[in-house]
Amino acid sequence: MCFLTILLVVAFSSFLFGFGTKAQENDEEKAYKYYKSITIEAGDTLWHYAKQYGDERYYDDCNDYIREVKRINSLRNDQITAGAHLILPYYSPL
Image (cartoon, rainbow, N blue to C red; front, side):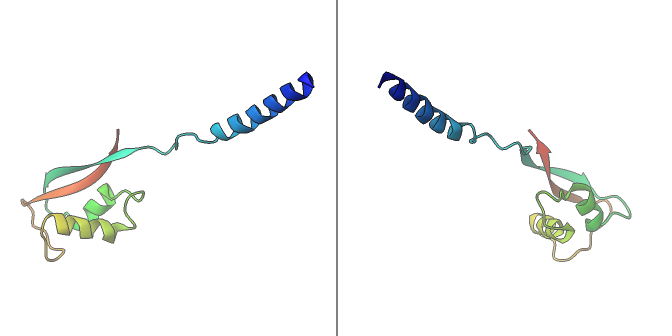
C-alpha cells in the first residue's frame, strides 16, 4: 500500500511539473519604438527612409512605414524637401 501511494505521488508530481516547464518565456528579441529627427538630404525620398528604418517585423511593408511617417509629420503627400526636418520612427533592441 505504501509503495502504491509513493508511485501515485511521483506520477502526479511528474504530471504537474511537466506542464510548468512548457511555460517558458518567448525567445523573440524585444525592442522599443524610438523616434529620431533627421535633416533631409538632396535626393532622399520617403521610400529611402522606409527601406532604412521600416523593419519588416513591425511594418507590413514600406508603404505602411511611409503612411506612419506622413502621419507623424503631417505630410499631405510624398514630397519632401532637402534641408527640411522629419521625425522618423524606428525600433531598437532593449
